[in-house]
Image (cartoon, rainbow over the protein chains, first blue to last red):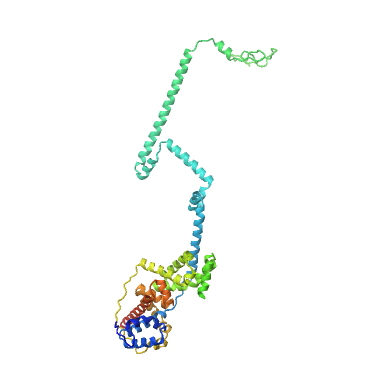
Length: 239
Length: 200
């Protein structure tokens, strides 16, 4: 670019005024110098023409019509943001249980209702106690999941363990009964011998009126009349 | 007048008036959509970006202070920032055609005043056809982003140099220089395209 002044204006001044000149915002005296320089300068003249053409082309672009759903989408997006913000504020006030319940799908969330939750808890504890008593360990289950080939081995091992425990339990129980039986037998053998009437006498309870229950004959009234009689079947007898 | 109206709407919106927010969206969505479209040259991107702009405006409206400047300038600054982010993310080709000086054979016999007054048919007549509009849009998309945004803000958004300087965060002199270079580059690209079309 030539910096020698032409018509009272050099090229840098011309370039600085170019944008304002295209907007018709240059003072009258400066405008004359500007126009003169543009006509006479081989660099600034084409520059002015190009800038003008470019400006007219861009300004000739028609304004586009936005998509019809744009406003609706914007309003929907911002109302969703608002709703989300309110939801976050609301959730911050809730307990962890309620937040967890809400985070689950509605169908599953209903199962966290207190009565269902208690049932599940009881079922879980029952199962865990049963598994513990059966000798199942969590590590065994993990191994089974990670190594399916170990499943059969683990099941057989678990069954054998349970069988051994049950057998051992009954063996111990039998031993206890045997010992108890022996002790009773020893006690019986070492006890002093007494007459059969003595024991009967001790165990017998007498009626308040002094009658002996065992020896009393209920087939007869107290006055001696017969109420009932048993028949003894003899061979050849007739009814 | 328009700024006062927008200022009142902003105040109502900050007070929680949903109708005011809707009014703001209806007033400005066209301008923002056009700005985004002219910059990205993609209707889909323009729609997404316009939506993003308004979501951002909605979230950050509390940070806007009426006394600091016009709402339109604030909105344009926000849009421009999002456009720059989008441009960086999309890694759009920044390589622009080199400027071949002296290729054009321009008739410079007329003075600037004559040409500005009524030198040729008006821009609407010249760019009436869709093809011509498409060519200009394509040329606009090919110039460097710095020049493009300056030209769009001045010639399409009709912002003054001071506002553009505020939006782009550069001095007014730089704004004018970018606008001049952008316009010249556009003219050269279009001239080259026309020559290619006539040769085919």
